[in-house]
Image (cartoon, rainbow, N blue to C red; front, side, top):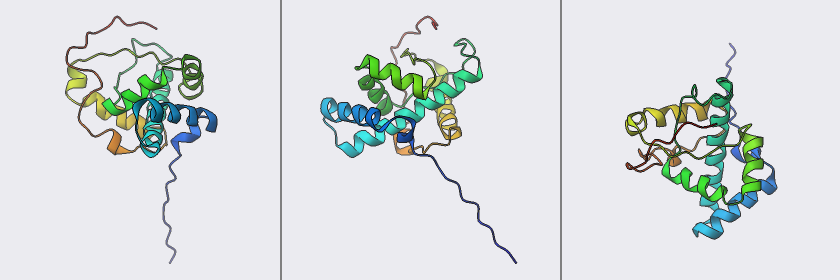
Length: 156
C-alpha cells in the first residue's frame, strides 16, 4: 500500500518585488505610520497580493475597466496602498512589475461592496494568485471606502 500526501506550496508575497522595493515600501510604512516592522512587512505583503490579484483579473478582461469586476482592499491594506503611492516613481515600478499596469486608486462605495460580496471576490482572487493570503488582514468586514464615497467616473 502506498500513501501519498498532497502538499501545497504557497508562494511568498514579498517575492513579487525586488528585496530593495520591498524594504523601501516597508520602511515608509514603519516611518510614517509609526508601526512595527513586522506589522509593516505583513501589510506590504498583503497589498502586493491584492495588486497581483487586481492585475490578473484586469488582464482577464483585456484591461477594460468597464468589464472588470471590482473588489476593494480592506481598510488596513488601503492604508498601505496610500502610503505606497507617496513615492510615485517607485509605486509605478511596483505596479508595472506586480499588476502589469498602473493601479489607480478610485474610492467607491456601492451595495456590492457594502454587502461583502466584493470582499469575498477579493479573497478568492487573491487566493487564485498562489501567494499567501493572511486572512487577519482581510476579515474585518469593512470596505476601504467610507459610506459617503461618491462613485467616480470610470477612467482608464
